[in-house]
Length: 179
Image (cartoon, rainbow, N blue to C red; front, top):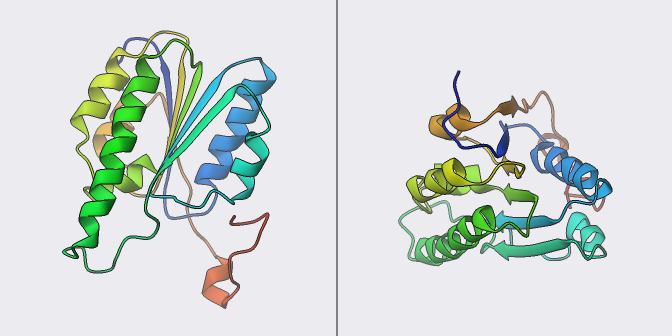
């Protein structure tokens, strides 16, 4: 499949299984090990106490922002959805800026697929930014239900498939595992 972008390396981690963000942060560790400067933009997530943010905040070459309001309401017609859309729009603006900014070698758009799949923001502006981001930049996107158009533009796409999860057995989220 031929890619439709101008030279940045695009990787995508999607699926219903655990490990999408974990894989992306592992890649960011590699990038930092090679002296790259990283920008993390998290969609949907709003908890600054998660382990990866605590860890990577110690690195001066990492810029990090969360543009989320947490879990989405079950009723997608809820008035609260507008707050989620506004947060996603802010995140999209930050993502577009980061993709065009030569200051960053590695850009992680965490949960961007989830935000797109839940119609919190349009995909077209992101596609335009991905198609025009410069050679040498690495872009990693995560989240469930990646839109087909992102799968098509990605150089590498992996699907994490859930075979079994602790949540199903009543095991709550645990520091060092889920947060």
